[in-house]
Image (tube, rainbow, N blue to C red):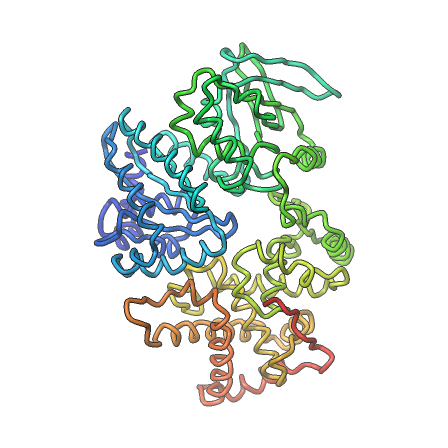
Length: 585
């Protein structure tokens, strides 16, 4: 991996944007493992003087996780415990954000504002030591002790955190997996020669039940990044979950090696399984019950590696049928309580919206389950994802794009307000069309010349542009306290060939609002954080002001009189095309 990375970081992007190979290595990791784009990766990097042993911070809103990364790009086989101690130092410092913000560099200060907001929203923290080497035996012992200390501290102060080693072997595994991340098909082989197992067939289905050494489970690919659990109804709930605490305690205090008897086991399905000479080959592997357990076991990896007599029960089923696999996933998840947002895909309101949408658009498909793949026979322009749809609703109808960045509030607190059974499919597709046009502007070409900090927030800032579009219509009709109908807006703009112009205005207005906020005086020892601004309700007033200002200035621009006249015709709607916003405050 070292030689591969060495060659790849010679590319112009890495050479022109990062001042040393250490930064280039961390940027490579962000780009290739977490699939961050060029702008996002550069924004994530905090390495430099006074970085406080924090090379990068990546906040994954979909997984509610803060990744704090320390990179060690070294061309040597093993490294000692010093890098592990640096990660421990960053963990100690992150618990005192105020002091860390005072002492850190400007990049770190800006990121820590976003970290503070994420911690308020109960995000987990994952510290990662990423290296092209392996740890010495002594360093592994230190890592084991630090994992235990962090786990114990999480129980005391309710500060959910974990520390993971991404060494040369794990780095290669993650790289190979990331190549097919958009449509992962995990292939894995397990040696059962040291295990007790039963090979049988039940209901015309191949079944293998095996007791597998606990330390073998941490080598299964796709645990940390969640790709192993795409068919699971939820991802990791964090180490503070009651059941997960019990699992961890058993790992560290199980002198009689009773883990096998305390644990209910793991349920895994695959498209095909082949058993040859005690070697079990699994194709299209997915764990449908055991996400919490495997994540907790991985968080204690160094301790687990020392356990020679601890086993865990696995049930492997050959289930190629998607519908059958989904039913198994739902019915086997009872060990930990499933949160409401995990089961919204089966809510009657969601299913009714799906039915009406697919009935209206035969070429369309409404995806309600995580990990669903777009049916090849459907038109991609008419495919809607439930998670995206919830974010569109709260940005447009509730006029709160600052809440669109995460699913928790949308599918928990505001679900009853947002998802209405009689929501018209025309409005669903209109929101879909608007977002498709918006996202064309958030490409590397950057046709609207958006600020680089905006482009770095591609995961959530586009919803503010969707909000800005709705406000263009509301302001033009003197309806600033009411919300326009998405379908009416789309049809009017499309029929008058003004969609691209409205997209342009909304994007420029968002950009102007950010620039104005960045130029405002900041309190002493504070750095303006675009990420926190975009997540605060105060940003909406700035966007509205920028839209009004643009409308006022448009007639004075070259050719502006004609555009202003056409724009006015495109934006004017009837009174019945507006309704009061859906309160979500």
